[in-house]
Amino acid sequence: MFLYVSLDARHSAHIKLGVISGQRPDKKLIPKVGPNELPFFVTLMEECWHQYPEDRPQFRELGERVQSVMQRTNVQVAEAVYAVRTALGKEKKDPEETQLFATADSPDAK
Image 1 (cartoon, rainbow, N blue to C red):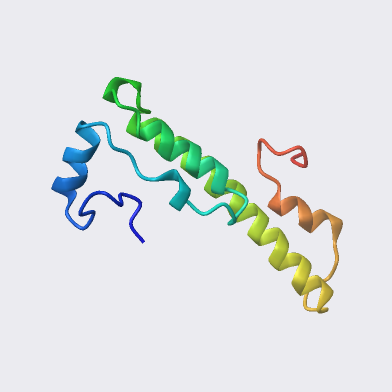
Image 2: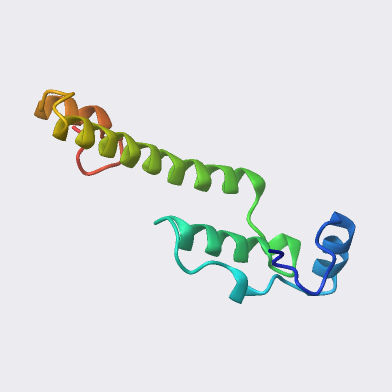
């Protein structure tokens, strides 16, 4: 599946020329169902597609924003693994241990 349906998207030079001429991927081809973070990444892509480079997010900002989402996702995965292991009796249920998963900016953090 190529989001740039009107371009030969296998070649970055074609994509570059398409972007310069104002073409953007067909948004109808972006999945509507996916991970919880899908809307975040769709918005991020759209910000990166801005016609004027000075209106696009800086690379450092992109890294910080993606890192923030990845940290939240990692915490959610760790909590889910812990919950499954606890339900299977492979972990002792200890309220203090759940604090291991709290991040500094989460409401559960001490």
